[in-house]
Amino acid sequence: MSLKAKALLKPCLVADAKLKILLCITGLEVGGAEKLVCALADQYASAGHQVKLVCLTEPIIVRPKNRNISLENLAMKRNPIGLLVGLRRLREMVKSFQPDIVNSHLVHANILTRMLRLVVPMRCLISSAHNSNEEGRARIWAYRLTDRLADISTNVSNEAVQAFEAQGAVKPGRMIPVYNGVSTDEFRFDTALREQIREELKISAETSLILAVGRLWAPKDYPSLLKAMSALKDDRSWRLAVAGDGPLRATLEALAADLEISERINWLGVRHDVPALMSACDVFVLSSAWEGFGLVVAEAMACQRPVVATDCGGVREVIGNRGSLVPPKDPVALAEAIKSALAQPAQQNEELGRAARKRIQERYSITATAERYLAVYRGEY
Image 1 (cartoon, rainbow, N blue to C red):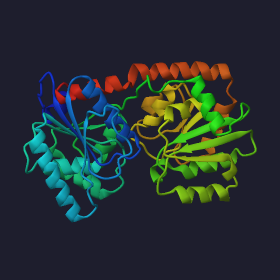
Image 2 (cartoon, one colour; image 1 turned 135 degrees about the vertical axis):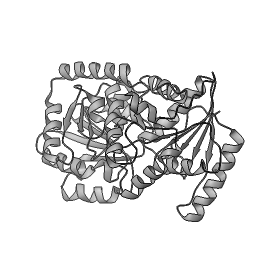
Image 3 (cartoon, rainbow, N blue to C red; image 1 turned 180 degrees about the vertical axis):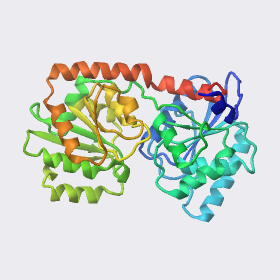
Image 4 (cartoon, rainbow, N blue to C red; image 1 turned 90 degrees about the vertical axis):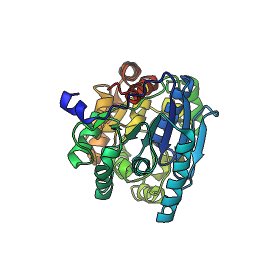
């Protein structure tokens, strides 16, 4: 970071050996940011820090593994009265807990905690974004207007930081990258789990299983994936499994029917055994139109799976040369890349998988991510 950029940042200078950390996130439904924040809470608690996790909205689907971590749900309603009630409850929590660090995650929590700082003293406030595209000028305007109320802002990749700067959400140098991390103990290839899941899904040894994981909504661009799979329906024996749920499920199921591939797709809904699903697949696919980091890509790489992904957000930074990248919103290119991955010799895929896992272990472990956040909390950036 340049000296000029560093000068724009307000150092938190929280040098205590053990910290009181309040993590605030918009919600705890299934998603990359949600999983990361819960994993960070576990990491901090294991290191002896006192952690409180607050989410603004219901429901809670993802939660820390450590049940001793204080978890509060504001159950905010999406209206002005709900906002005021949520602000009041969060104010009381901050006043009672007296955290050394407030680290908010995702746009609504970021803006809310910044507004709260106008009425409640906070020793250090860090706003963490998790995307390169916040979907709308109003959100960018809100980020820009409240930027100085945060000591530091972070995002999950260099590309995402640059995107925020280009959109005017933050001034150059006011946001720094902190990459997402994966538990490589949890995400690892497991032969027994592979066989178990393939038996559950009735996938024969001769059938290639392609896996996609993520919420069924516009940013993930599942229509492009379905069109790509439709182009391959005569090529060889394959099945597609999609783990996730969301507002577009009915639309996507209808599209699959129109493309005449419904019988080859397993819509799995929300799953809590993603490492097992990744072990079971032969190729992992990310079809997103935009991403901040692409945590599921790192998880698949940790499981030594061949990855085909769209070149969006920080995905290129994660994959390096350990997978295949195609342009977003290009079903033809996506189909060709999937076809190529399926045709690779097993030995080549195994070698690529080992190299991919090593890359994640060296660059994107959850331990390294937690240490990086703690360093930022202490003003070491």
